[in-house]
Amino acid sequence: MILGYHNSMNHSKEKIMNHNIKQVPYPVNLWIKNVRWLTQEEAAVEGWDESRSNTAVLDLSDGSKIYASCDPEGNGAGWLIGILEDKTSVDVVPMESIK
Image 1: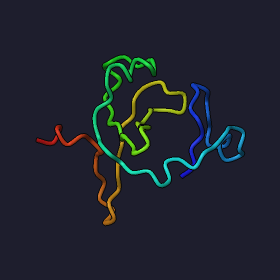
Image 2: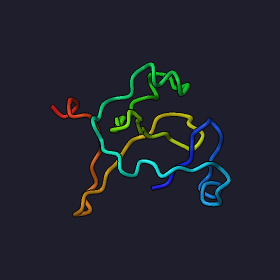
Image 3: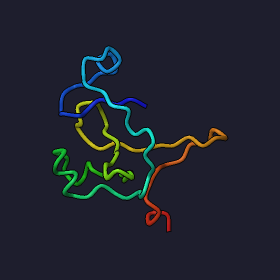
Image 4: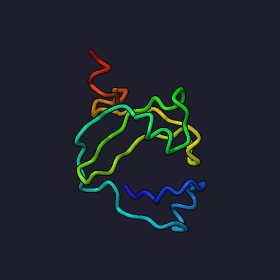
């Protein structure tokens, strides 16, 4: 997967595919250390209020993190969805929310 750097600009798929922004091979060769909820501090950095910041965070082995945005501009949090090998759709949420 190749992702461009996020800098609060609109990075459309076309811009990314046309190499108009810097790209890095990320998150290739990294592994997920933890799945947790986005903190209020992290939401504030994105400019999201608490009511719009309910999303899972994937903490990666290099100290970076991945979480979903509702759109390329970062106007709010998104929901992470996984597809299992048998094509079953699952929500990606921290384990404490499943108790």
